[in-house]
Length: 384
Image (cartoon, rainbow, N blue to C red; front, side, top):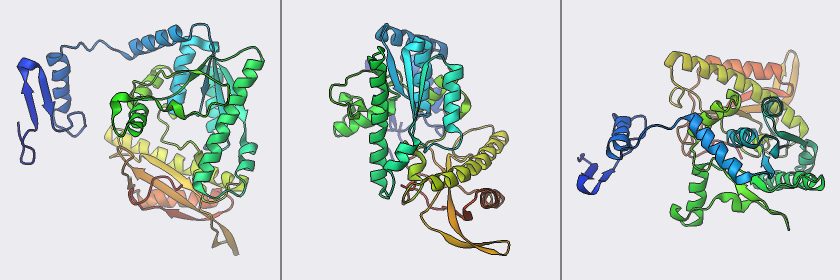
């Protein structure tokens, strides 16, 4: 078949079992795309749709047990969906042979550390270690304003905290052989493409970037390395993880530290955590209303990513009869399907007004609210 702009939109050579398309049948907007894929998989290739999430879990659990045997596994738990699903999967497979290390750098959103600890101490039978490193991170970031330097310090310190726990376990007679990673298939594709100049055929996982200390070695297990993000979310739900983890919106590893422009301090963190909580409450509710109206959860109807950021300035305001000299908060809300591009969300004025009123009234130290109306490009979604 052909189109006005494409001389060969699709072609076939049945005798040699060759079929090709020049468009994307897998995307939601393609009419009959799913039908075409079903025909290809089940009629042409004669596959049978006999996989279920239960069978995928059973196969994954069996593979982990076979690889690990009686040895111990350690996992760096961030609270994000990938590491949480790996933790839940390994918990089902090997239980207390798994040690989950949750390094709390203090830059998660309000309530998140407590949620992570609740899930992995009450719901799953694993060895959970909560490393309270908040003060150490604040001290390391004192006076640091460069975004890349912030990222480097936070990433380097994570591994120091993590390997210190592994060393303590070894000293207690519980040495760890395996390191579990939440690597998913797109991570491997991206890492392989970067390392091979775009050739994904010689892919190796990006775990080579882990800065192992002298004399330290772990064998790596990556149970999700053949899964895409939507499959990981479905797997997490099937394993019993709560929705607030499974459907957590994208969140950077350095967390709120790169949503605070300039130096990170305890005072700024407290302001941002409280403002960000209001943004999430209001936009979570807004998305739920849209879902109730449309019956769909997708980025054309709902806001994909939303948060507060704190610039390194103060502005004049007035409260009652007094002038104030306090901080503004920036709201960021975007719609996106792939994170490569994003458009600012056209939120209703009453919603913007409600968020502004609540933040100024409920968050001490804030007297003004801005809304970022810049798309990506030219801006990025995050501020630093």
